[in-house]
Image (tube, rainbow, N blue to C red; front, side, top):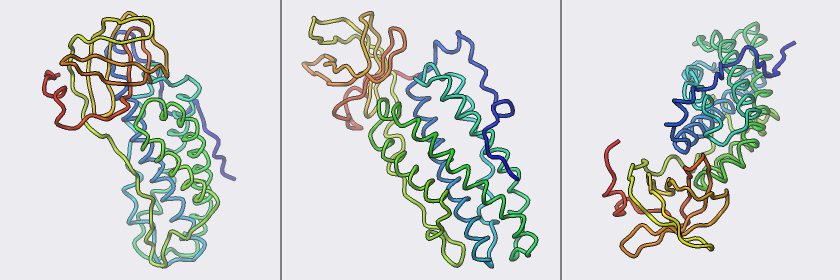
Length: 289
């Protein structure tokens, strides 16, 4: 029988990045890219689980050929991001779980591809070969739901709320597929998918200008490093803590209110309580880079 247990020895290489590279990594951007890529991956997994199950159970006249492109993703973004998991605020345990999950997914894609080349209706023997593969896709859905649950806390802390909502929606979608439900699949092999609510809001602009933090125990000089639609990066010698609310004086009698969501030495990522407009003056003073 098939064993869906994640194999940490045969999964993607998660060799840590050199310290010289890690110091220059923008953990906020890389974490956002990791979450985006994983969300799309989970959508594909639920899709293939639902379609393969429906194809077997209904003895469908259609095949999986139209969805063969879903097996071509190399997981390069995930592989890269997990080399910097400390900068992303991810534990080694969670990083290893995601790495092993991607390794298992890669093996299952390889197992499925031969049956995705068939243009005609599957024969009885082909459908018999597809049945255990469909079972493995459903089992992988359960693993994917667990990964998303483990990510929910750092996603809520570091990213715009719509990413957390997408995570919950995808978890429900994966659980539905894992249970073998096929109501999303039509008799003609079409599937109705959940719609992801949010992708990256705005690009991050490098700023590098002086600012002032207004704290309960006094004001602190700091540097505003970058800005995006819903967050800023700052550097200061004052120790800040995750979850701390801060007012940032950016000049011109203007204060930004934000919450600390990422700490990396003297560099901090903050999520703004009020997102910036695309034409905000702060973007106008950014430099290239």
